Amino acid sequence: MLNNNPSGITISGFLVSNDRDKVKKQVPDKLPQFDEKVSFKRYVAINFYPIEEAIKEQQEAIKIIYGDLDPQHFYEFGKIDFNTIIESQFGRIVKSLFFSDFKRGLLGASKLLESVIKGVKIQSIQKNDHEIVIQIDSDKLYCPEYWQGLLEAYMESFSIKSKVKVTVSLDKLDIEVKWF
Image 1 (cartoon, one colour):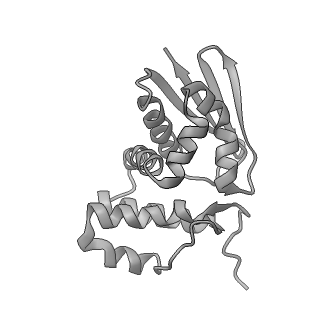
Image 2 (cartoon, rainbow, N blue to C red; image 1 turned 90 degrees about the horizontal axis):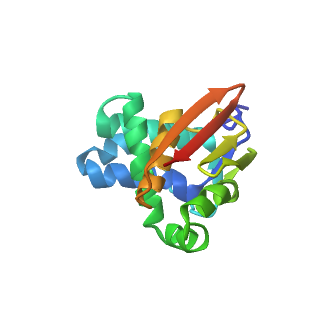
Image 3 (spheres, helix red, strand yellow; image 1 turned 90 degrees about the vertical axis):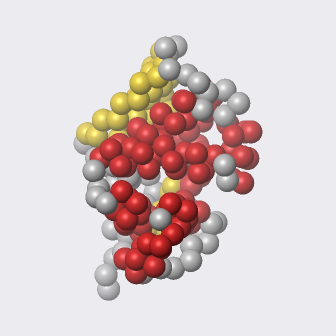
């Protein structure tokens, strides 16, 4: 039997299905093409699915919307995703609980991410008064540029000047967020 979840990492259904929604919104005439490429299925928001399915859906959505998998497109997708998620019902709840202050949100990011991504250790570490690093003990999650776009959009939502740097090493991601 083929293992469709070799990483053992799973992700909430609402994060998988929002890629289809982006295709539907931005290039509605290409929705059938997207559905065919990913073997369309309905994802239940509260269920968890293999990260591999989510990555496949994200990559197909990026190819259909932008034409290729250029890293800049993953970056743009991360920015769009932040705004899509924060405007959702889940996002509004999370914003009221975690995002009243940008620093509190960054420090709470590990708990938030662990609630929607299972099978990976995530931690937020405050390095100094102007730097927090979010460490994800897997490089099997979305590409670094995606995370950079997502976190930059987060900081922009607070009108905070910042620099986000993502480093991949030894099967982990370090997302360094500095603000000025």
